[in-house]
Length: 135
Length: 114
Image (cartoon, rainbow over all chains, first blue to last red; front, side, top):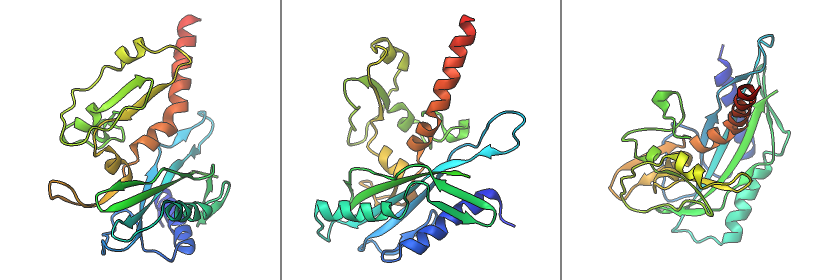
C-alpha cells in the first residue's frame, strides 16, 4: 500500500498524464532523452505538513507542482505562441480542481501562475506553478 | 530561505555560495550576477535597518544558477557539466511558509509585550 506521499504524487501524475499528451513530460528523476524537441520537466515540491491544534490528528499537506515547458531555441516560436502554450498548460489546473488517488484527494488552491519566460542555455523556459493542498 | 537541506531547510548546498548570494534590499529586486562569483553573504539585519514598515523589501538570489536550482535544469552548463534535474523549489517552499513565519513572529512580540 503506497504511503500518503506516494499517493499525492500519483494523483498529480495521473492528472498530468490525462491532460498533457501532445508533448513529452518528464517526471522528477526521469532522464530527458532528446534535447532537440520541446518537453515539460516536472518538479514536485512538497511543503512540510502543518498540524492545527493538539486535538486535531490530521495535518494539512500542501505543495507546488512546477511544470517547466522547455522549448528548443533552434525551433523558432513567437512570444505569443510561447505564452499561449504556457496558458494551455495552466488551463488544465483550474482553481478548486480536485485530483484523487485512492483515499488521497488534492485540490488546486488558486489559479496557476505563469512566470515570464526566459532563455536558459539552448532552451526557452516557461514555468507554470500549480499550488495544491490536501482536502 | 537560506536554511539548507542538511539543516532541515530546502536549499541545496555544496559550497554554500547559493545561500550566501541571497540579498535583501529596498527599491528593486536584487539582480543576478552572471559568471562565477563568490558571495560573502549578507547580514539581513543591516538591510532591515534601512527598511521602513510598509515599504517593500525585495529578497532574491544573485547567483546565476539559482533559477536552475529552483526550477530544474536540463543540458550542459558553461563548464561542460551535464545536468538532468528537477527543481528544488526552495523559493516556493519559503513563500508557502511565510504566513506562518509572520504569525509566529507576531505572537512572539505580542507575548513579550503582555
